[in-house]
Length: 276
Image 1: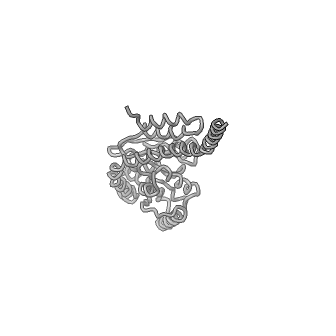
Image 2 (image 1 turned 135 degrees about the vertical axis):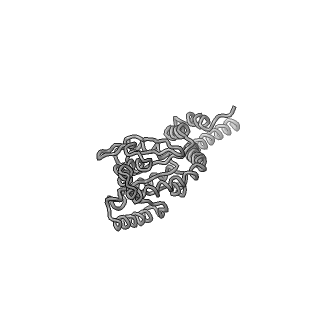
Image 3 (image 1 turned 90 degrees about the vertical axis):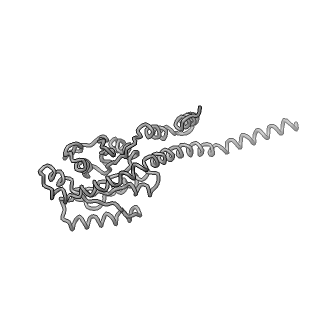
């Protein structure tokens, strides 16, 4: 009976374990296989206090489902299952390493990333630019990453329209300069006004918040995400297994000089004994 891919790689990696470190990649592969779900996972990303939790509360019209507050609230990934997809709130990556490690688990499973930036902060901070670069590695290709990347500027209500337009322009220029790409999907939203409009039954607040447009985009994108769910999962598995295979191959190549030297010595001894 043939072994599964995980069993095969486990068997091979155990053989080479004394010589190379493949434990981390094997654990990543096992986690990916164990946590696979059929519905798309829509995951927030961003630094602390960027507005991730408030955004999700607005999207699901539940003001306090995802905890918010003046003090950092999200320290673990929190998942809400909806009919068509999962929404996942993650800790801010600039808080501490433990929070970052927790968030990475969700990024590795993400089918759509909602990258949230507080517009009040103006242009992207250096940590955010580096963070976006890091997020790319959790997707098989650069094109696949940008196809699943949604930029969301939060707290629009705290700025004048002209300020929002200017900051948006600056961020687009920043992304092009730093990452050599143009963001095609860029929303500016006002989660606070949307939730207030919902509670106070003020439709104008909800309409002007930008939340409905973002939700419309997500729901429209969902069918594409469903269709490609298996594809990106397989590509992620392939990426990890390839790295494991490369580690083993590189180790074997590094040992070739030793093997050739040993063979040369054997040949020399054989000739000496044969013609002595």
